[in-house]
View (cartoon, rainbow, N blue to C red):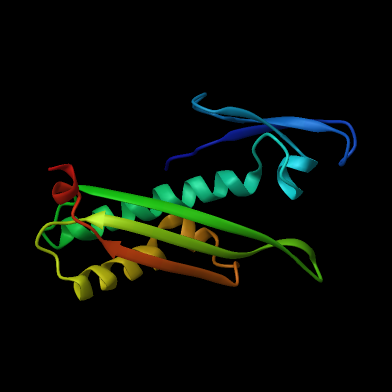
Length: 149
């Protein structure tokens, strides 16, 4: 079984304090604070890291499903937008929007949509975030070779 870890440290009060987040692999370390999480202040926040994880997981899940169906993508580019809202329970991730553009030669749009929806519901991060009320997907086939010429 694989185990991944990350570290967080915080000093001070919620609104005036600050902290740092570091991935166990060491490839990322960043500052976070109340303004970076709940306003538009500098630094990162847990929701941004969730967005990165979800975008990466979806792209890999789609790649896996494509491979099972004898397709290879030239490129898959995914953005995840994590919405932080207020509920009776307090601040809550209320919605995640996945937007993905993929260049996959020979794949019909309807088949691509089916595979993209399967990737959305089966990727590990989607399953871990099952408590999020809404996770949407906008997936589109593109031809990157045509734009490179």
